[in-house]
Amino acid sequence: MIAVLIGLIVALVVTFVGTPVVTSIITKLHYGQYIRQDGPQSHQVKRGTPTMGGVVINLAIVLGWLASALYRNITLGTPFSANAMLVLFVMVSMGVLGFIDDFAKVAKKQNEGLSIHGKLIGQIAFATIYAVLSLTLQAPDGKVSAHSGITFIERPFINFESFGAVVSTILFVIWVNFLLAAWTNATNLTDGLDGLASGSSMVAFLGFAIIGMWQSYHQIPQMNSHAYTVQDPQDLTIIALCAVAACFGFLWYNSNPATIFMGDTGSLALGGLFAALSIATHTEVLAVLLGGLFVWETVSDVIQIFSFKVFHKRVFKMAPIHHHYELKGWTENKVVVRFWMIEMVCVIAALVIFYLDWVIRSGL
Image 1 (spheres, rainbow, N blue to C red):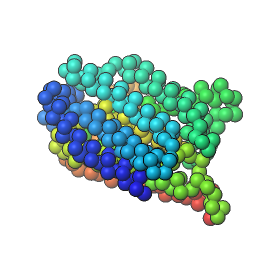
Image 2 (cartoon, helix red, strand yellow; image 1 turned 90 degrees about the vertical axis):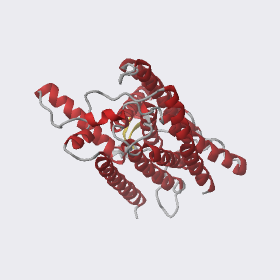
Image 3 (spheres, rainbow, N blue to C red; image 1 turned 180 degrees about the vertical axis):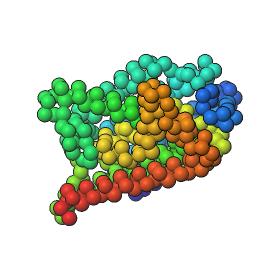
Image 4 (cartoon, rainbow, N blue to C red; image 1 turned 135 degrees about the vertical axis):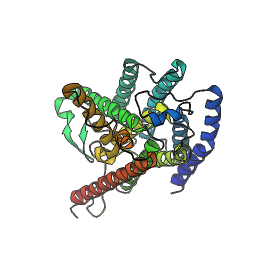
């Protein structure tokens, strides 16, 4: 419990103290956000708001987990978790891509940053490295980070290993690439209103923290209850809680009217972390419900594009769907708070399903 509190406190302090410092530096460098011209006109007043605030979020999560891991290593002799470092590698690497994208935007003085091909190449490279290592790096107890397959909760319902070692690895690499691309883009699309992505991410990562904590207490079968094969779930819990604390602290400055935006530096990193935690906790399909709001935002964008290209008609006034409700007359704060509520419902539903799965597997 002390290790968990250390991680939470460090992440929270880093965010609360670091965000104003980063805001001041970015303001002096004139690295302000460029607003898309085809978006709601009410957003044009946000032009010039400091961006790249995701740097603080990433730093807070890494330092929070590191402080906790150091405490456990010094006091208990607990080795540093390879699984946790893999998950953080995904977050940081996606954050680096986002930072390059944000920097390109301010350098070009427009809302178009890193090219799609450049971003895609980076994502594929980092996702492939993570996928291979998650299948090969073993913990002292012999567990690996991921199952080679598509997992709903705990065990793959589509197992790639039946196709042989080489093919299963290739299929898993493709699956991980899809997950990372999907969740980073989903989080990026959701980051369109003050506090929407940071608040929704806070709720989503709280769900992962509860799942990780439950898994950490059920590593060994007791009284015929189901035991999980997740590697180092306590570390995953701490990372998720550090993400909750980081998003909470950032939200203090990112709530409407925002004094700083997380930018792609934050949205891609948080999306990457969400994807990696879903793989590491063996809840890849359950995560669709756990991050239901992000899925809803993405689906609305896909529907809009498909409808316009095929039927030359728009289903929504504007996509992603948060802009649709803005143009319907909802205030920005109303949209954000109600979307947070939707994400809370999604997380609660996911946790209920997760618990029922444990009950069924345990035969209780």
